[in-house]
Image (cartoon, rainbow, N blue to C red; front, side, top):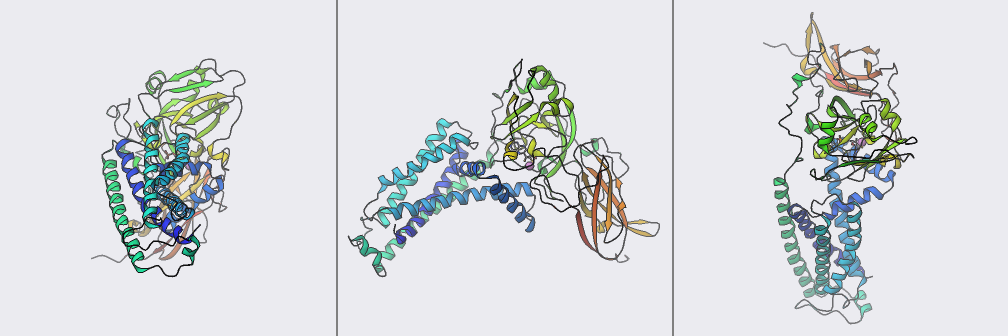
Length: 559
Ligand SMILES: Nc1nc2c(c(=O)[nH]1)N[C@H]1C(S)=C(S)[C@@H](COP(=O)(O)O)O[C@H]1N2
Ligand SMILES: [Mo]
């Protein structure tokens, strides 16, 4: 290895890899072929140990929170995509350094580069074969595209080697000594060599920048015109949009304090968490759900069959991610529509010793659900609609499961296959160290201390304070607020959308000037007070008291 050549190789690696990434990005948008940087990242996320992944996710969530980078789940996806690009670039730089460093001055050319590139394509092809979800076009188009991309990359690297480090010289360049050991001991390079090397790098750099900008721009434009949302067998027109006016509790006496989050989460604001950088693409014309294994009557259900053969159920649901910190935004409420899984299961007729469903998803996610749980709770359902529309691609189109009282990690989206089995198998996140049951914790949050919306009541000023409380399917029986070191005071509870959704609470607090700390706690439907121990999400969901600090100043008289 030669350090100086390795440095050159690293620069060459960067200059060749950046435009390669841009061209692959444009090709993925234009032709629907796979985008290897995302495949490599997705694969890493699946094979690295659970602790590493969890530490990574925690760090991302912490950074988003510390710098106030906006809604957690969509920002996290962007950060992860950026990481995927950086990792791929670093691999390209390392490969360039290795290629330059390992070869003798005259030892490498574009043909050796081609072989090097094709060798690197092999692991990428394997990763693509086991895990790609970034390809819309089939493997017949994607696999050759990987070979062509990496072959071109390698040839270009080899060509740069010829120009920069090989025996063939750039015009005007002083040929390196034939004695390889003399080269390392050489003093400062001859000036013309430096200038020409620099000129060469600048020229290649300009070309690389041009290709990178053009490829990225083209890809971005194509991304804009890509059809969004699933084409569906379920007509959107047949379902009226749900306006908050139509919500079952529209006349409830307790109104949310100004600044409380929307009780019914707008669909595009609902958090999204899944294990891939890109949404699995499911061809709805070919999608069929097999339910087989230990059953007497294996089923193969189309989406239409599912919708027409079984009565549909509507349930207002609050879904939360187990990674949601106390007071976080990885929680949302919407209307879920689907069919009771108990009924479908009865049609499949599990055999005597069948005990579990093993659910597999299009992205490689999987989870196990016990038949006892399904048979004891008709609310467990297979869902095809959210907010009166077919599921969006992000939220699991065409089908996902709903299990009351469990965090999202137990509830697969993009269901591809259901097997009835006799033996238990850990689900995707359970295998990675998260709670096996993942029962939703009781939690309560202060969304607002509405000093901008003071009320007058018999000469007294009141500050509306409010937020949410949630305890899975156990319901909320009581929410209490404490101001500074005072007593816990009971708040007013708004009638919830259903017995599994969050509850909006409100407390109109007699105004006192100065800085105050407000805390909240909830009691669930069984009478259990929420766990006040400050604890992070891993492995069983965050606990602790949410508090809110505010400085209140006496409003100035008007007029
Ligand atoms: N197929 C699949 N289903 C999945 C996941 C996933 O990564 N893949 N993530 C789970 C997790 S951790 C959560 S919190 C919920 C999030 O659902 P949402 O993105 O629709 O809000 O989906 C669950 N279902
Ligand atoms: Mo989650």
